[in-house]
Structures are given as C-alpha cells and as structure tokens.
Image 1 (tube, rainbow, N blue to C red):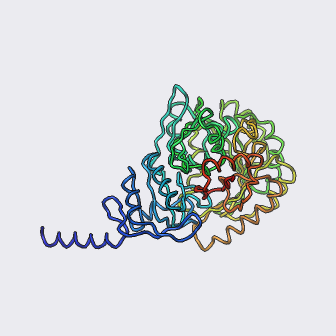
Image 2: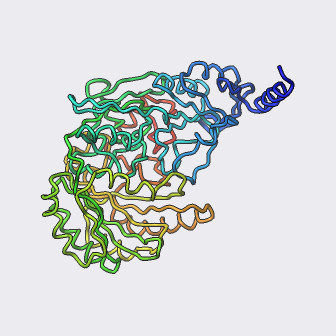
Image 3: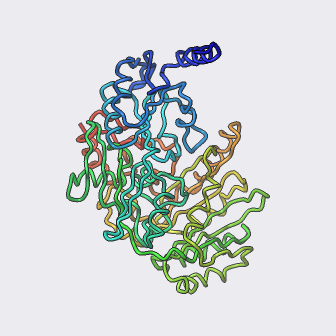
Amino acid sequence: MKRREFCRNTLAGGVIASFPFLAAGARANTGIEAVSLGGASIELEKAVVNELADEMSGRLILAGHPEYDTVRKVWNGMHDKRPALIARCANANDAGHAVNFARENNLLVAVRGGGHSWPGKSVCDGGIMIDLAEMVDVKVDTGAKSAHVQGGALLGHLDAATLPQGLVTTTGVVSHTGVGGFTLGGGFGRLNRKHGLAVDNLVSADVVTADGRLRSVSPEQEPDLFWAIRGGGGNFGVTTRFEFQLYPFNRKVLSGMIVWPVEQARDVLEFYGDWYQTLSDDMYVGPAMLTMPDGVSVIAMEVVFAGDPAMGEKELEPLRRVGTPVQDAVIAQDYTVMQTKEDGTFAHGIRSYAKNGMVREMSQGLVDAMIESFVPDPRMAMFTHTAGGAAKRVGELDTAFPHRNAETMVLIGGGWMDPAQDEECMSIGRNWFKQLEPFTGGYYDNIDFDRDETRGNNYGPAHERLSRIKGQYDPGNLFRLNRNIEPAA
C-alpha cells in the first residue's frame, strides 16, 4: 500500500473510532447513554445494540453517523431532539425488532411516520426513534378500489398514486404530512364532507404492538384494536400498513380562494354562518383570517367542490355576491393545486405553533369573537377545517374519534423562523385562542401543540374502551409519546 493511501485510511479509522459506531453496518463500539421510559438515565450495552443492528434489514443510526443530524430532524423546527438510536426501518419486521429492543431495555420510544407531530412527539431525547420514513410504497388496487400504504408514506404519495387511476380518498391539507399520524388521529381533509374522515375510510391495517407482534387488524380481525386505532392516535403500536377505501374522482375540480379585506369580515362570516348549513356534501368551504407579508389583513374562503364544476358554480354563487372581494381565484383546476397550496407556508424547518377546538355551530357569539380577537400579525392566523356532511353521519362510538357532532374546527396557528420569536408567537397564539375557546368543545389531537390532557376527557365516552384496549395491547405504556391514553389495570 502506498504511504499516502495508508495515512488516509489510518486517519479515517481514527475518526470512526471516536464515534460509537463503525461505518460499515453502524455498529456500536461502546455502551450508549440513553433514557428509560420513566425518564431515568440508563446505559445500553454495546452487545445488545449491535444485536439490533444485525437483526434489521434497514439501518441503525447512532450519534456521530453522517446521516444522524439529517434523519433526526422533524417538520417543526422548534423541536431539536437527539435520540440515542434511530431505527431506520425497511419493513414491518424491522419495526418489530425495534419495539422488542425498546421493551426489553425499558427504553423511551418515539415513532416517526411523516414527522409532522406539531408538539414534536415523533422524536425524543435519549430514546429510540422508530423511523418509517423509508417505507413509502403505495399500491393501488383499481378493481377493489383500495390503496395499501406503508406507514412512512406522505399524503402526497397517496394522492400521486390514486389520482392518475381516477380514484381518491380523504387526505389532509399539507401534502408532506405523514399518512400515519394524520389517519390515526382522525384525518380531516378537503373531501371529508363527501367521503368522511380518513378513519372512516380505513379498511384494514398492520400494527406492531408492544409485544413485538405484527397484527393484521380489520372489522373481522382483532376488531377492538381496529376500532381503537381509528382516532386513538399512536397509543396502540407502530402502524406499518394502511388500507384505504377509494372512490371514483374527476381530478379537475372547482377550487381556489376568494379573498375580501378584513374590514368586510362581519359581512362574510355572518353570511357564512347561515349559508354553510345548506351546503351539499360536495362543497368544502371555510373561512380564514390572516395578515399578508405586506401587512394587509384579509378574510379568505378556501373552496373545493368535489363534484361537477358547473353544479359547484351554482352553489358558490351566493358567496360570491357577498361584499366586494379583492380576489376570486376559484376556477376548475387540478385537485393537487389546492392539495399542495399550503406546502410552502408550512415548509419543513419552520417553527410552528397551533391550538384548536371543535365547533358545533357557527354562532353569532363565535362570529363576534373571531372578529374581536383578530391579531394583525403575519406570523399568526385563524383557520378553520370544515366538517359536517359524511363525517357527521358516522355514529359517535363507531370509531374512537370523538367529535362527530362538530360542524367545523377553529384553530390558531402560524410559523416563523427566528428562535428568538418563539415565546412571543406562542403567547399571541394562546391569548388569541383563549377568546375563541368558550365556543368550542374538545379539540383535534393532530393539530394542537401543548394540551395537557391527563384524564382522557377529550375522548368523551370512547375513553373507557380505549383505556381497556390500551391495557390489553400496551399494559406497560410503551407507546406514550402521543396524546396518551393510560392503560386500564
């Protein structure tokens, strides 16, 4: 070997030795400091870490690995956490190995699908991050009108696979959101009035439970667990596959935004409060109040009509006569235009905060509160997610999702980039929402930052059954980094 090449290789070996892994296979060469389920400091022995690395088809990534700082990042830039281990799963078996490792070593667990958890629950300090980000395959069965989706897929992956086949299901409003967390928490989207929530369209799933077993669940197989994952969040295991019902769909839909000056907010909101109750299931339309980057405040209506655009034009016409819009961009266009419209607003790395509540009716009191509470700050805004329609016609206890009587959801959310603005923006958001909260009942788990829910009140009459199922499948509360449901004894 030439001297220069020998020196280069020797230097590389010295650098590698300074980290607790070997580049070929990411194997630990020392014990690893970690955090237990209860928050205590523990040390993971080198041998058990290397055993997990050997078992996995995917990669085990440790601190010091060239990809570690990239892989540990999640969508919300406010969360900069450092897991002791990242199990980058290639398949469901890898997830099972990671779950067994965590249980046997009493190790804190975070599960990452798309990494869009607003409060950052998909990553943790000192525990194991079970990362499904490379499991993104979507298979469409056009005959059965169903889609089989791996647990790390994003909503954009699902739309991209189904729409070219003339099929669709309810997905959310930011395309780089993960299918997993979105679905397990309920799944609001622009088609939920037409086809129900994501949980209403879940046909079956594969779940790795706390005992490391991969279970196929459906109305016929382990129906209690299937019921619980439809709204109970990530409390019951790692969901590695989802099967969704699909529906025929013409992707050219009437959609876009109508925008008025904020001074016309009362006219728009009072009209909307009566008008929305007459809408067909095809019509998804809801108000937002925000301030543009140039400082101009507006009230806007997002529109998606999931039927014949000509029928949508007729149904939308009364709204268009309200006030004097400064912009009317509602046209017949590809569905993905609206499905990706907010991707930049909520881009990866943004620092973001949100609070929300479910609303049974657009009352005059709520309209007044929306107007009086408005804060003209470009970093924060008031949004709504329209419900009702098909989502409301599902029985209260048919799934674990508890808010079937809601007509809409109101939320205060926003984004900024400077960490020095965190406390200011969060304070604005909390104070703003506090004025709307009296008109809400319960909240949507998927869009909330800092609720301290300890008694399961948000699940209403579903909580007792959820707690019992949690006790059956996760008695040790291994999956606790979520809106946690404590297991029944």
